[in-house]
Image 1 (cartoon, helix red, strand yellow):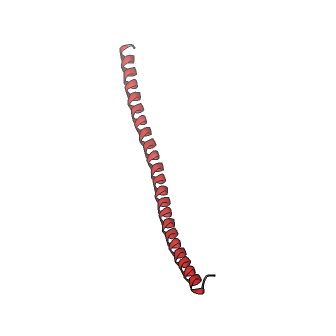
Image 2 (image 1 turned 180 degrees about the vertical axis):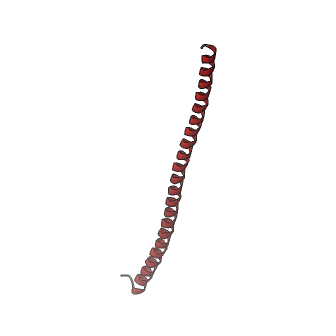
Image 3 (image 1 turned 90 degrees about the vertical axis):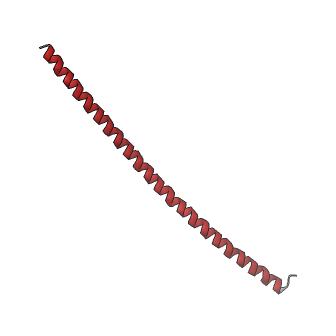
Length: 84
């Protein structure tokens, strides 16, 4: 049978190991939470970039369309002048 000192030594070792494990788990938890925050920020940034790209593309299409409309109007007016 194990002596009282052996049992006490094992209990102290287990207590120390549990403390170390708790510390490691706390550090891992902090790292996971930090990564979660980073992922959330990246997702928000991605959404912003997508919206910015959509807006820029729509602006470019609108600008091109306006230019084409003006050119077609000019051509139509010139055609009407040449063929009254």
